[in-house]
Image 1 (tube, one colour):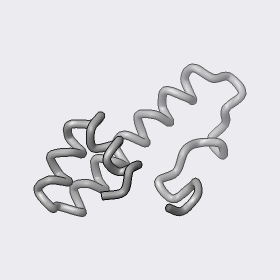
Image 2 (cartoon, one colour):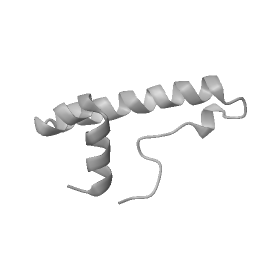
Image 3 (cartoon, rainbow, N blue to C red):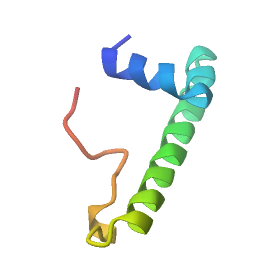
Length: 63
């Protein structure tokens, strides 16, 4: 398993359960839910973060 995925699985129990159950759709759903939570937090707590700055499940470098 890729090191980044291992860190996510270690720190997020719902993602870990879905991953270990070999349920890719549920893993994606849990990760997207987590990203939505992060975005909501950023938008609520960081005045200069706008909608265009939100985190995306497809943003960032490819591994």
